[in-house]
Image (cartoon, rainbow, N blue to C red; front, side):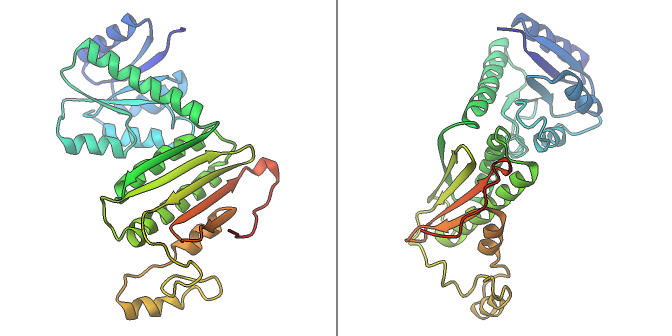
Length: 287
């Protein structure tokens, strides 16, 4: 196996040098950075296979750096290990929310570092493979934080398809809208109920299927939701029922994808986004 490039971002020189020696011991190539401001340029120059990122940098917060890299299409799939002395669960959760793949607390042993690196690198290979073929099922708790984390993971998969950045943004928003609807209305915010989201890639399109465990509904008869022929009439209904403002999710998601359809029960919605290169057009809603 050829040496992999590992970007080490750590402002303490001794700690940076120690990690560099451990990386060399694996026959990989370390690139050392001592401040947060240099990270993006170093990533663009060296195209690392993995980043070891200290949280507490003197100039830029490590969480913010991680979030920036995960929002960029060119760097979204570079695995990032947050390395820090902060050991509270809140810090770990914050790392997950900005897209960190692993969280390594100081002090750590060489074995712990190597195992964490191996898991992060395996994540990258797995996503490169899954993003281009097959079908994957995800089961998550009915909480918007879990939905947002899964949506970020799905975005990683989209990066390996012909979808454009605009299409990816549309699909990400559609999944968030319909997933939130399933949590709020299908599951009535019962966090113990599991939401299943299926990702499927076909030769000319990507399909997302969102299935909740609720009783279902008739999507053609939802007086408190916006309708294409009169998108604001439902606001009076929501006001009378004492429901929060909103109700645009279904109409919005329908406009963001090429195909949008519910199953007969009304507890499963299918979203299809076609690759622009095929020249295919969206099909009308059907069963």
